[in-house]
Length: 244
Ligand SMILES: Nc1ncnc2c1ncn2[C@@H]1O[C@H](COP(=O)(O)OP(=O)(O)OP(=O)(O)O)[C@@H](O)[C@H]1O
Image (cartoon, rainbow, N blue to C red; front, side, top):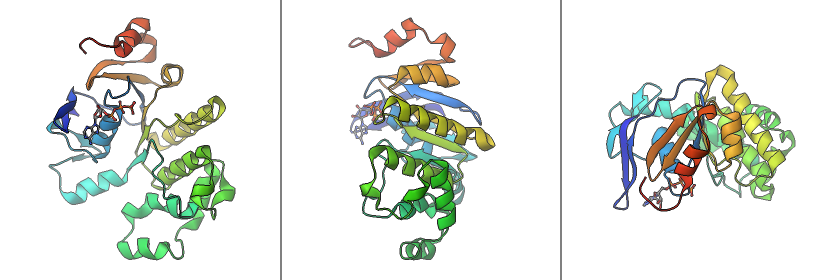
């Protein structure tokens, strides 16, 4: 993205964002609450439009490319949402298959709610995330950590080229958090899938990722490999008050 800005509710949420993520790159997005991390992820998956600047993803430029090209790009961007974004009343298989909805015609999507299509692919994805026995369970009956895995399985069946994860480990204990990060890295290692994850856990961001992008008040103030992000950069990002 070049010079991207987002204005929401009369306020500048992001300004002057220049960012390029390469295939297979693993980027941790850090910064204080309200810095604009979620909004930046939404800009990348096209669910929020830039008010200024350009955002390109997988050969499409949001707002300029044809609807068909834009849809095709968005199908290959998988997002793990902060609050999972699952339908608790539905069985796990339906929530996993939601990752295929963009690729299915409407009739197939509707019919699949009665008799699930591609249950085998959903089963394989669930096995991959370690909950292969949950296919027919009601999603709302699963623990928070299990629901997080369902959300990752949904992204897996999408066969993404880019995975965006919004605070994917916020609700997990340290051991589960490590497993989820391992899982996201394993997904990214396949087929050069890029991973961009917003994180509040600095140890994970600095210890595991290839690159750290730090946002403060809607601007990128750090963009470097972890070895170059020291106490001074972290303090600059997280200090309270003052200008960006
Ligand atoms: N739809 C909206 N309308 C108005 N303001 C919004 C909207 N969405 C986000 N904002 C504002 O934009 C700013 C950035 O929000 P965002 O959720 O991107 O931050 P964040 O860095 O992800 O925060 P957190 O770490 O707390 O999740 C916040 O001040 C938020 O209130």
